[in-house]
Structure formats: structure tokens, C-alpha cells
Length: 255
Ligand code: AP5
Ligand code: MG
Figure 1 (cartoon, rainbow, N blue to C red):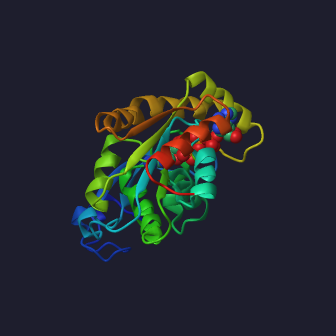
Figure 2 (cartoon, helix red, strand yellow):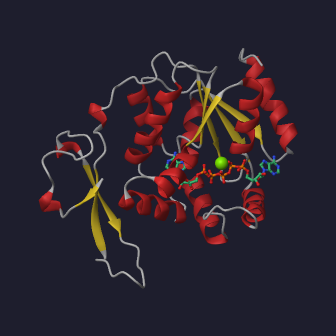
């Protein structure tokens, strides 16, 4: 990850030593700050390993993959923890990977950029998300009975990128369905005690908008493919999990 004016793109990527011709430039608005004056916009060069140079089919031979979908506050994390406990799945939370990168990543520009996207309740670009997910997934290949991917994909483009690169889609997707009113109520309640910077009214509104505009088509996609397991997530945690358990047992997973 590096900053440079567009006419000063180095010929080799500093991270991967790959040719930079396929690295994708992104225009990123600079955050205004009282203390540091920045130009209105600057070019963030996402110096990720180009997709074509990442090992393709990285999930080949991996245990079944279960995508966990639902609006912000629908209970994805809560239910994933229960599945891990009982069914010994592995769980990767993409939001958590991003928060970790935003707080402890090596690159200060990337850290700040992710932090700002999360704060705006938007979706982090697929190139960045895929790089983190690729790393996390390959650590889990060959272990455990299944892999839960919490909060992924959140856009059609992500679903397609994943299938292309991983060489596998999900076995099925759990969708925790919840009304906007319930989601809002849960997140505002959690916001009173949680450390999450995005649990405030303004960001929650934007997270909800992003969910309905960008992520709903993903849910429709899996519905059309016959892979969607739709669960009423407005019931209490144990009732929701009871149905999750039934669905997993029905598909042959053992406790
Ligand atoms: P992420 O961390 O995934 O957040 P989210 O989707 O907004 O959802 P939450 O984690 O807040 O809620 P949850 O559904 O896990 O519910 P939980 O169990 O915690 O993503 C954060 C951000 O990262 C995104 O906004 C985006 O910017 C970025 N990002 C993430 N994935 C990305 C991707 N693929 N690509 C690009 N960017 C990405 O429960 C919530 C609360 O409700 C808790 O207090 C819980 O105790 C309570 N609760 C849970 N279940 C119940 C129940 N049944 N009844 C009553 N209360 C309940
Ligand atoms: Mg969560």
C-alpha cells in the first residue's frame, strides 16, 4: 500500500513485487481534519496482489463453506458463535478482519481508509476484502468441519470475485431476516455499552441503507440458486438457533 500521484506509479508493486499495470487505482476523498491540512482528494493505489496472480482455486479441498447473511444487528455473530460451539465449525467474520486491519494493520493509509469506510457504513472495496479473506480462508483449509463466513458477500461483485478466485461457492447461505425497526433497536441498545465505533445512530442508518441497496441482491441471488436458508431472526436467540441447528443436522453435519 502506498501513496503516489498517478504519474509516479512505480513499475513494481512494493508489496508483491508484481507488475503494477493491473493494480487498481481508487480515488479516495481525504478526511478533513482540523489539525492536518490535506488535499481534497488523493489517489490511494491499492497495491494488492492482482487477482490473476493470486493462487486460483484456493478453497479446493476445503470443508463446506457457509455464508452468513443478514442486516446489521440481525444476530449473525451471535448465531455463528453458537454453531462453532456445537458443530465445531470455524468462523471468519469479515467485519472483524476489517476492524483488526483498521486498528492493527501495518499500513497507516490503509488503516485510516478502512476506518473511514466503516464509519460511513459503506462496503470496503472488494479488492481489499478479498485479500484479507483469502488469507483467513487459506489458514482454515483442511481443518474443521465447515467454515462460516460471517458478513460475506455483501455485493454481487464480491460473490462473483470469490467464486472466481476460490474456485468454489458456498454450500448454502444462512439468512437472518429481521425488520429494520428490530435491527435499529438492537444496535442502539448495544451502542450504549459496545466499543464499536459504528454503533451510533448516523452510522447505523447508513449501514442499513447499504444493506438494503447493495446486499439484498446477494440474498436474492442465493434464493434463485436454491441455496438460501431463510430464518426468522426476530425470535429470541435460542429459538433462532433451534432452527439453525435443525437446518445443519438436516444437511448431515454432526455435533
Ligand atoms: P460487521 O462487523 O459484519 O457488522 P454488521 O453486518 O453491521 O453486523 P453486526 O456485527 O453489528 O451485527 P450481527 O448481525 O453480527 O449481530 P450480533 O450477533 O452482533 O461489519 C461491519 C462493517 O464492516 C460493515 O458495515 C462494512 O463497512 C464492513 N464489512 C463487513 N463485511 C464486509 C464485506 N464483506 N465487504 C466489505 N465491507 C464489509 O447481534 C447484535 C446485537 O443484537 C447484540 O447486542 C446481540 O446480543 C443482540 N442479538 C442478537 N441476536 C438477538 C436475538 N435473536 N434477539 C435479541 N437480541 C439479539
Ligand atoms: Mg457481527
